[in-house]
Length: 190
Image (cartoon, rainbow, N blue to C red; front, side):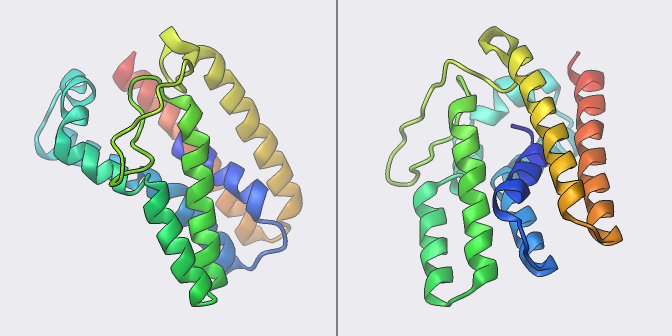
């Protein structure tokens, strides 16, 4: 799934009657598993000037990038963080790692040949799903429609749940980022 979709779905699942700090930790947890991808893309596209084809067909699969990305998608590492948050009795930490877990579990069935090693560093196993959230050869077109519908429903639910102007503005920003992603994707990858 795309990062803003993770944030919105995580807020729907975890974010009822939570403080602003807790909602922020859930939003950060929805972003963190994808954060290395943003760094990777920035380095390859902006700093190195790599082509889109090179970025997604070669650079993405280089060992150092895969290790960097998979650390943030590792269920054992996330579970370790969750246990530390439990030990510290940090509700914000617990929600952060719960949100990261939801993100990773949401991604698991949606990557065909570009999935993460969700048990890194203990295993190099990757689940190769018959479904891809983006690849039209593996139902990507259908899943994109399902994701857009889930995002719209999530926005509706959250808009009704969060009555404050700040909360609703945050939803608008997340929705705007989701729309901006599609504009960028269609511009760069079409």
